[in-house]
Image 1 (cartoon, rainbow, N blue to C red):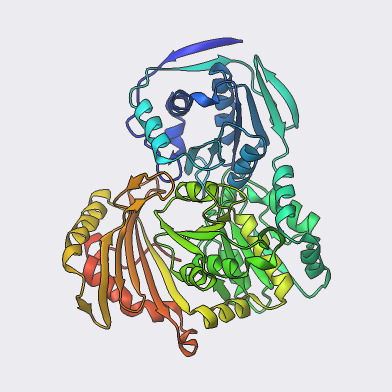
Image 2: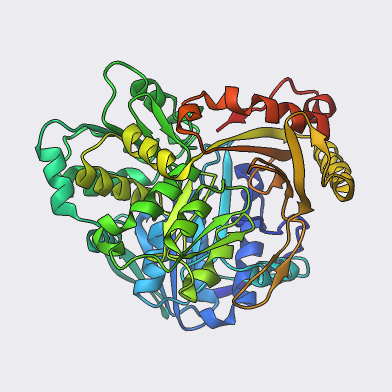
Length: 544
C-alpha cells in the first residue's frame, strides 16, 4: 500500500459545534475539506494510533464516499483496527455501544443528525472519545486549532473496501471489521428491558404501535427489535428503509416534520403508542392517541417509573437535564431524594456525570433522552422504555402522564425556533437582552415577577471545567421561566431558540392547551427581547 502525503491549506470554518462539524453536502465535497478535518482529528488524538476506531453513519447522501475516505486515511495514520457498520450504517447510539463494548479508543460518526439529507442537504462528522461519548470541549477545540494550521494530510492509495458483507478485511497493515450494525445494540437493549412482558403486550392483540423511522438509520434497528424480537406485526415500523435523502422527509421527530405519524396519532384510528426517531437515531418523539408527550415530561415520567424495568430496578443515583429543558425532572429528583444536575446544552456535558456515577438518567428538551448504558442519547432505547412502562402499567400514554402531573404538577412547556435568522441580527438581539439582565430581578411583567436573570454558566462538578454564556435564563416567582439561546446545529444563518415554561400545580388547571397556557409568557418574552420586531418574522419556524 502506498501512502500519499497531500499538501493542503486550512479552512477557517471547521470549528465543531455542539454535535460535531456540520455543513452543506457541497461544502464537504470540496477538495480536501473532509480530509483536513479527519487529519486534524487524528493529529489531535494520538491515543488512536495502533488502536481500534469505530466508524459509521446514518446513510445520508455522501455517507459511503466519506467512509471510504476515512478508512484510507485511518490506514495511513496508523490506526490498528476499524469496526465499520455494514453498508456504512451505524446509529449514533450504536457507535457509543460498540466503543464501550470493544474498548475502542474512539469513533467517528458521519451524520448531521436531524438535519435534511440529499445532494442539497446537510452532512456532518463527529468524534467520540473512549468512553463512547462526544468529544469534550477541550478535544474539539484542539481539533479546531489543528485544522487552522494544517498543511498536509495522509491517505492510502487503495481500492474501496467492500462494506456490504460482514467479515474481516485488510487495508495493508490495518484490520477492517465490517459488522452487523444492529446485533450488539439489540443485545444491550435485551439486558435493560423486559422483552417477555413487552411481547405479551403485542401478543394480546389489543395493543397497536406505529414507529416512524423517517427513512433514516433507525429503521433496521426498529424492525429487528420491535417487529422480529418483540413480535409487533410487520409494517409497525414505517419508512424503515434508510435512504440517502430520507425519502424527501426532514428526519426530525417532532409534530411538524413527522407529519404522517402525527396525523395518524390524532385520527380516529390512532395506535396505542406512536414514536419516531431522527436521522442518526439518537432522538425520539412519544405520542399517545391525540396526546403529545413533551421530551421534558418524558424524561420526568421515565425517571419516576424507572424501577419497573429490569435495567433500572436498582434505582437511580441521580438525574441530569440541559438548562433549557423544563424543571419537571427536578421535582421527581426532589421527591425521590436524589441529585439533579443542570448542564449546558450538548450531550457531552453529561459524560463526566455518567462516568462518575453521579447520574443514571439524563435528557434534553430537543427530543433526546438517555442513561448510563451509553454516553449518547438514544432514541430507540427511550421508545423501548415506554413500551416496558406500558406493558407493566396497562394504562394509556395520556393516563400515565396525567397521573404524573397530578403527583408532581405540570410544567407547561414550548420551544420556539426561529431558523436561518441573519447571524448578526440574532447575535445583537441576544447581546441586548444580556445587557438588560442586571436590572431585571424584582421587575414585574403582568402577572410575572422576575426572581432570576442571568447568563447561564456551568462548572463541572467532576473535573472543575467551566463554561460561560450558555443561554439567557429569566426565572419568575412561582416557577415560570424564559430561556433564550443561539443553537449550534444549523448550517445556514443562526437558529434563535426561545423556551417558555410555566408551572401549574393545580390538577384542575392542567388540561389547558400549551399555547393558551403560555400565551401571557410569550408576550413577556416579546416585550423583553423583541424577536418578531427585530427579525421581521411573524412567528417561529417550528414550535415544539
